[in-house]
Amino acid sequence: MFDIAIIGAGIIGCSIARELSKYNYKTIILDKENDISCGTTKANSAIIHAGYDASYTSKKGIFNARGNMLYDQVTKELDVPFKRIGSLVVAFADEEIDTLKDLLENGNKLEIPGIEIIGPEKIYEMEPNLAEGAIAALYAPSAGIIEPWEMAIAYAENAIENGVELKLNYEVKSINELEDRFEIQSTDGELVDAKIVINAAGVYGDNIYKLVKEDFDFDIHPRRGQYFLLDKSADGLVNSVIFKCPSKLGKGVLVVPTVDGNVLVGPDSEDLENDQKEAIETTADRLSFVRENAVKLVKNIPFRENITTFSGLRAEPSNGDFIIEESEVKNFINVIGIKSPGLSSAPAIAEYIEKMVVDKLGDSEVKEDYNPTRRPRIKFMELSEEEKEEMIKKDPRYGRIICRCEMITEGEIVDAIHRCAGGRTINGIKRRVRPGAGRCQGGFCGPRVLEILARELEISPLDVKHEGKDSTILVGNTKN
Image (tube, rainbow, N blue to C red; front, top):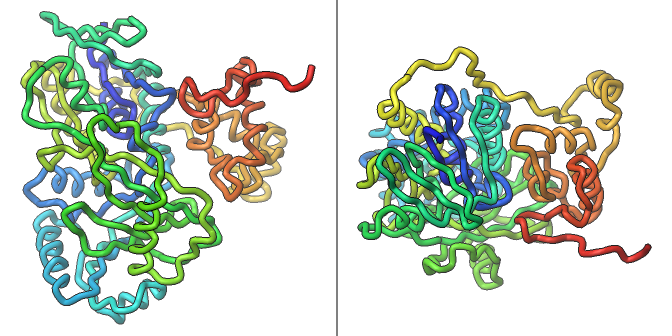
């Protein structure tokens, strides 16, 4: 029996698992997908928000402010790229100045460092490609950018290194509340028993809660956002996270550099029905909406350099705020409705849940062999020439380039496969070390990655998947 079962292997579930791995608890992460970070975590704006937006009285505001402060330490410990590039909320009309003042006041109450309202001269000095007509902006220097999926993977790796178990392709069918534990059954009939259940199931959070409590006063519906991802040739278009003044539907279309040197444009905001929690397709009309609004914010956006479009689903709670609490069912903890700024808030949410669980289970001493650091990932192209030569001498696979767009070596791919919670699919490897993330989107390196996966996992190439367990790539031989 486990002390703790965490349902959901996104950024929230994995960050909680890593914090709980400090203790002598038996913990397991369960997820219905074929890999970590396959929900909201893999498709969002990849921003660490400064924290001025959500009300200072809300959980979103409180956790965002604290979470932002924790990112320097946690990314250093887990060897995840993170850049504080600052953000601008730009006003183009006099009536929007009041919105900036409200955001500034709210940010000051949350003690967000360094925020100020700046005028046109400074705005255009910072962002020369901003659309004409900006009259003021709220500047927040602590905003940053990150790879959210790598952050979740790093959390999971470190948690597993410290004793947490991970079970993928485990779709929860039922949860039976017993006297001293919960019995969690998968759709395949497999059982997991746990004293405490932490529900971090993203857009499915309300579905999971319904398995233990039939009636409650909220729901979670999917809100879809669609994006353009521009090639690295667009690098330098903007230097900061650029927002327009927010509306009731959220922060609106933004333009932001990514931590890897691309440019991200989006999202729109489209509320879907509760039965559309897998609706991650893109649509021509909504992408047109993104384009039309983005060019009002930043000029000369080179959409001809677009290399892919994608969409992600946000878990929109009907109460308008994060749901982070022990539910009405004892020892069943909901950590759901974690929409933006959920990524920014993750370290603080994990810290909060850690204290809650320790209060319940006791044994609050950190175990002697707890290791908070993740084994560094070798990024071959960032090494010096001398380091590259030495690396190739140790392992010749680092001398073989597999992905020419991103200059990723065979050695990096092999390492990504054999790590804790290693990649097992084409997209899983793409998330970990970026082959297929460049201009050709895997058109050239995809077959080589497939070959390496088959070889290293000792499986048939026919069994290598693109993403989910049913995403078949090859169906047979064309020649004998």
